[in-house]
Image 1 (cartoon, rainbow, N blue to C red):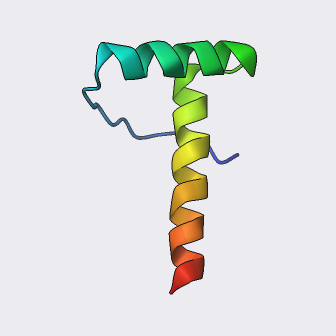
Image 2 (image 1 turned 180 degrees about the vertical axis):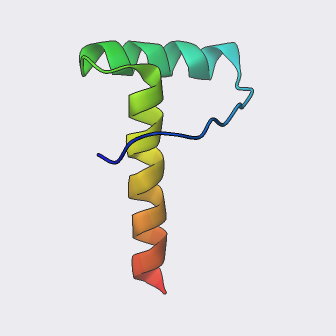
Amino acid sequence: MPKIDAQLGIRVTKDLKDRLTAQAKCEMKSVSALVVEVMEAYLKSKANQK
């Protein structure tokens, strides 16, 4: 994974934060790492649709 050198702040519901935290814990990752992984996969899937 490339070096993370930029920050992005977002606001989410408490429910979404709790679910992200629980999933990250299950995968032994930080919430940040999980969100980066999910967003990379999302953007890759969108690029493949073009």
